[in-house]
Image (cartoon, rainbow, N blue to C red; front, side, top):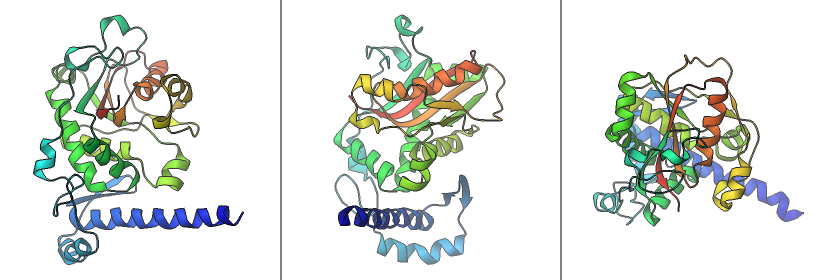
Length: 281
């Protein structure tokens, strides 16, 4: 009983350290910073005054080789390899990451664009963003996600004929506000939308708290997320937009599949894609 009572204050203390580490470092280094679902422009005088102090308290160290002045140095960036173009369902070759014609009936989305091949370095990057409040990592990863969308020929053709909306995979409110304090998918999606000058709009919500996907098998993942999303109230959609869901990593594509199914119940003519940093095999 004593250990259980001590566990919560210890976790809250660890959360506050990681949270303010990321928040203060973000305020000091970023020309634009995120707070309360909005992006703000940093005051120049404030920015310069506290940048040196906070950099001394929270030094910037490369996640790959622990060299200073960058969260990912130039040499470590070269170690990240692009992902081959595959169908996200069958995992066979498919140009532009489109769903293969044999699986288009069962998939609610048209493709999932994947930027990096999964590696130990990419895993470290995602973990730093996902659990350790390293908001600076989000900027680098969002730039790459924006690039994979720009270089995808199918997405570019669709964006010329359809209105494009960037959206994110939601977290349950308990996990977002009490366990972690933020949603990494939302951070990435807002940064990608800002880079591409495309509107960002949250479209679905998570109705219940679910088990963490990383520790589940393929069958368990599909069952874990079944019917977990619901449509947000008062969303503004016409009928034939291109929706791009942004997420950090995919394995079976079940998360984007369930979000797409939820949207298509009310808007069946939507074209839905996903874009992720990497695919866990």
